[in-house]
Image (cartoon, rainbow, N blue to C red):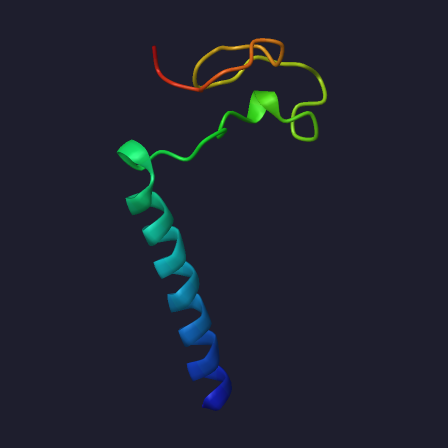
Length: 64
């Protein structure tokens, strides 16, 4: 039972931390969420599925 309560407390703390980070950010957006700009996730140099930018086009990922 102690392990369950400890796990539940840690999960609650993690979710609260993420919620505070979203609340503190302007417009609730995380910076740099475009996976095409991460060379470890995009080894083939494909365009972002959300905004269509290539890895060479650095900038914010937004639906423009």
